[in-house]
Length: 264
Image (tube, rainbow, N blue to C red; front, side, top):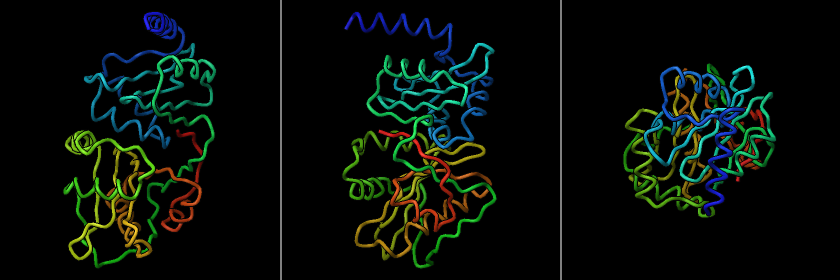
């Protein structure tokens, strides 16, 4: 353990000089640099959520910037609790970046520079969401969090979710800092469908938690929610990622498949 810790310190120092720099303080200038680099990439928008909500004040979020010898930013890495997200440009040193990720370790990993089985879907700013919608539902925004958690837990039993308390602390913090929103539909006083805008930036939104209870599927509830989200953020580009068999579902709402990314 001591050896691993010393190696981490040494390796971090070397990378600080050569390529990857740990962000100790998130100044306005540094934040602007991060946003400019990340905002046009699906994973970049996703990792901006915790950065904008938490900054560098909490131990559970760590931020690194990769630069080339000319000082140009080539990579952005975050470790949020144990999950690591890395966004790299075409001129990033991928070999060095991979070595760094192995050193810091991770419980989950998202990479934009390796192809995987997740499809990036995008609705460009100014494009209309063409999802079929219903007028018989009630839209609930940023409320009833326990019901929201109950729906995503039931619909994604194969996913590893935090406990409600841990999830609630995070999502409510993001909502209070205006970097996230939650949306639900209720039908006959029953909550049936969810969507979360998990990261909201000046130009883009990353959405997730698209869920509908099994007995209520096929009735355009999820599409109704997605359209509500798109209309609220009509001045922004909307991103999400999904598995292959869900691509047609989002294409019917007007989203386009733009890339494949690595998520585990």
